[in-house]
Amino acid sequence: MITQTTDAPAGADHKGHVSPGVFTGITLSIANSGAGAARGVVVEDVLPEGFHYYELTTLGGNAIRTATSDPGSQGNPSWGTWTIPAGTGNTVSALVLSFKVQVPLNPGDYKNQVKITTATGVEIDQGDPVAIVVEPRPSLTLTVAAAAGQVTTGGLATYVISVANVGSAVAKRVVVSVSLAPGFLYSTTTSYEGNGLRVATIDPPANSLLPLWSSWDIPGASNGVPGLVRLTFQARILPAVAPGLYNLTAAVTSAADVPPQTLGNAAPVSVGKGTKLPITMTVAPTAPYAGQNGTVTYVITVENDSNDAAQWVTVTDTLPQGFAYQSTGSVVINGKSTASRLQPAAGSPTPQWGPFVLPAGGFNGATLVITFTAKINGASLGPHANVVSGNSSNAQMIGGSDQSPVIVTSG
Image (tube, rainbow, N blue to C red; front, side, top):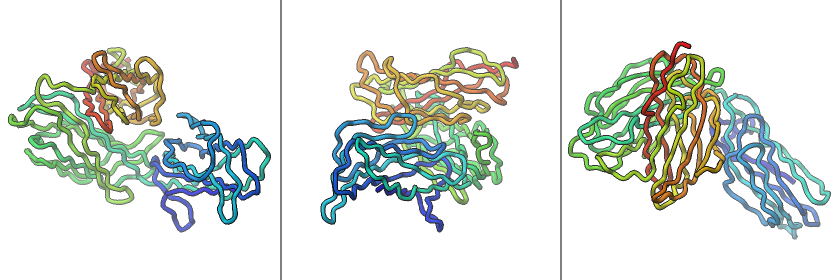
């Protein structure tokens, strides 16, 4: 007997209701109510179209694992192989699997299915499939990057904040705010980009510790391309700031349908000269020029020179205005291909990969290299800088921008 549940909030129709692109949990309970053991059991979850498996969260029940087969990075997740004992008295034997999936961007009514195979013939009661409704709602993603990984006291740090609406409805009155590190003071906003409509103009005062920008209506995704607001600002670093690594905290709020988001310990910069940076990041185009409506290939390199492995590493590329992610060519750690659970959506202005474990590098360094292609669509002529940033659960990661930005030409 198969029972399915989801942790998505239930509506009046008893279905889970979620925003486009979010992560939600599904739990499968495979119970044996028969008089004999079910042997050679393999469980495959047949995900609805557009859903992506992310990770197993809990494993429960009293089933016995007889062979190990875990889900791959692509396709439907499958687990095997199990023996589920017969129930005894009032006790039901079961295998319980809980896992997270990322729902699609397209609104709709989706049903999850389960496929069970066994070594011997058994009667299978499929039960009711779990139903998840992806509603036409806004869904905001917030990314923050420092344009340069190293700055000096008394100088300026440049930051790029991107708010993308990957949902299917307009995000109303979006407000962006930042909490700067001690000794960092807001200086000026150098640019606003994207297709968001500014409905109220509130900009930070000079020397603010908590700069705030308001407000935009950001359209939903169209033809796979999210709505976008991107702002670039500079912060002045006081001469008394001690050398070291400094982060900021960014937040985004909206009038309705979008929960507030806070991104802490983001966009680290190293203040001072000669500071040892265990995890460094670079990005560079493979060619100096690219034509309008053409493509450009970028190579992101992440190097770990420390004596400890960097855990749960994610990499985010903040593409220039008018550029959109197209495809990933390769993801390699120390020369060997590796899988990324996070799969960037085509058309994304801020593709993201990970999570990875980057081994300790020591003197020789350990490297993660991501090669991907971006489509140029509407970018103006001239140079366009790309920015890369990252996060880790136990290491400081220093992002940066390409030293020789690709130059967009007319043909």
